[in-house]
Image (cartoon, rainbow, N blue to C red):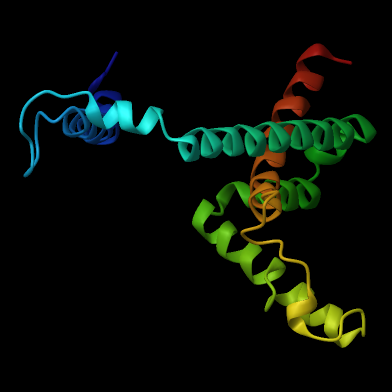
Length: 173
């Protein structure tokens, strides 16, 4: 078997990633970098004692959990409602299209939809639902992470649909 292609792929994809993570770890331990003065754990101790770090970790866990649960429930309900639908060209194209969109593009798209100056706020203003664009709810950079969750939900649901469709087909339910 020819291992040249996979080895080259691993070389150009994993090696830079591992080198970057390794350098960051060595930098955080004070072993490399312009200001390095030798091995120290002070940076890690300082980080682990900050409440803002733990709040950020908790927020990240909350966003991940809500996104995964919502995407899983939405995908399971779509697949169980009509599992053969995603074998047809048009529905499968529409469902899997977000898989081709980079995350940064999806984030920009959600900002254009949900921000105070975005499409939904302008539509709400034109329909007379709000009196001023600033009266629109803050769904970007809010305490609940609504914009982040919506963005991740739009990107994760197709993965779960694909996963559940394959399970449905393999188990011949």
